[in-house]
Image (cartoon, rainbow, N blue to C red; front, side, top):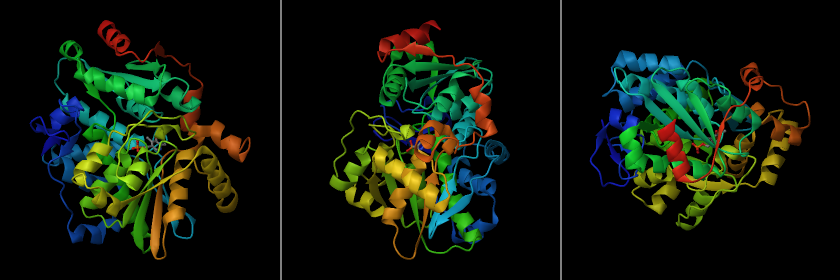
Length: 433
Ligand SMILES: *Cc1c(COP(=O)(O)O)cnc(C)c1O
């Protein structure tokens, strides 16, 4: 399968090239040239399959032409060695818990999958490969975890100083070895801009092999479609019927776009809810048809603090830039920090379910939008303990128990390199390291 650029000015490339390059040479995002549909038979039996088995079938549709079946199978089963269960919160509202992986946020699937796939493509490669990743909080740890101690690969995690939670920061600043954390004196958008500029800089690319592990990378982004198929299967397995609506807490829109791919592959989804925090760029687009990226603002759902969502270009491409078609599959909601807190408190008290700030946005949008006869699933994208300070400030001290997986990070010492938002500083650092 070939991959084309959303900017359409450069030739198509192989999967290998798309994964190693991350971003197309014309600054566009790679898209698979075909989206293959499943037949009815697959959906008839999907509820009898595990998350891993379903993921393997979906992975074959994406990557089956380019990676031998046994290797792809191993890749899926080894990277997805955890569950993503459905939990009923109330009436027709279900939480799809995507935080049972090693770093306890949904980016584990893409981060680990991409690390393994890149490792496969780079087998026998002589030069050192530098993975650049901008993070708003959770990507950094998922990617670092996936690449930790992998020979021949160095990872640089760029994160906005003071804008990620303590636990998030510890998860990528304490590993050491081949993982370097760069603490940027700016926002996530600055981090993302620095990474993109690095790919466009000729001198840097002559000197170093660079790749990206953000959701701009197809190996990071496409595997997120697995979740949606799994949610459908688990509902069917439990005998739950109704038209399916997904609510997706969104920042860079990789997760939601992967859901759209699932729909294009035949998954029966009635609509998607794009749930934003105060960074409501896509919400505004859905209301007005005008896409106006702007500087991000800090919120308590920090992993969604994105002012220029990369994957929006992929959404436009999927729908041939038609605002009307996009609105046929998607509705938008946005919530302030105050509303997020209110929802976390209410759901904890009334339903005994602890939401993290991101999941709370998904839940609230779903409650607002769900109609009679529909079944709603919101994506609970991170474990509440990743945001202990925020969650306890709403629900009370001592309400959050730190899972062992997270507690382990808290005892190690943070190591990071401070850096300005100037591209020249970043470039010098990479050239001189
Ligand atoms: C990254 C992230 C999001 C947003 O996902 P996108 O794919 O960037 O839209 C939501 N919640 C959490 C916890 C995240 O880490």
